[in-house]
Image (cartoon, rainbow, N blue to C red; front, side, top):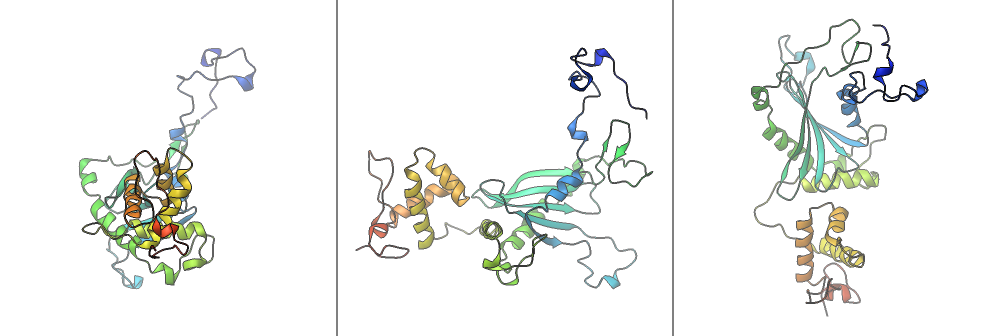
Length: 301
């Protein structure tokens, strides 16, 4: 297809030098970036600075791949990506789910806002995603000369067949497992490491995912002394910085603000912070922190 030619009517500023001319915003040839990116790039980006876990593989039903029947149908695949840089308070992991009977790849983000592990974002990708360039050529996964794929529509039946409950349950079981502390993990481009050998960002991401993916318990779980000690010190350190204390602590501990408020209340009740006094904005150190040998579990005099 020949390169298109433009006239003065196509530009906002036709009198300007050629390299400075700008097409009218409503012009059909103005680049739409939604056509310029491939979902394959978005998928590859999930591997960057991530701890990756394969939960389900297409041939899990056939541990010995030599025994796979010729008419065997591959099963679903589920891959988890724990990003070293979280996406916000409560973030746990990204996931990709694919199945032979689904015309789409399912991408989602798992998070725990204090009510258990759940989905906060869900995207459906066409497997053969591509785009048309300015010359009418299709750019995407198909090989040269192959016709562009015609994707099946996403119907209500397709949506019903996405097993979101199973995805969350399998992801929770995998993320709550702490075997990585002994067995180690491999990060793309880095040597295998375990426990404290991991980079701080990787260690924090795994510990956060483990904590947030734990199955919900009946009643409120007990808060240990070490956590309340850390909360009290962080509270006293941040209280002098003025408004926004709960938000800053939520960012620091990667927990929702209601959880932070409950922890502060528990720290007051257990003696790590002084009781609230009318007319005073912030609490001071409690008996456990005021004691000369104060620390986690140290009794007050």
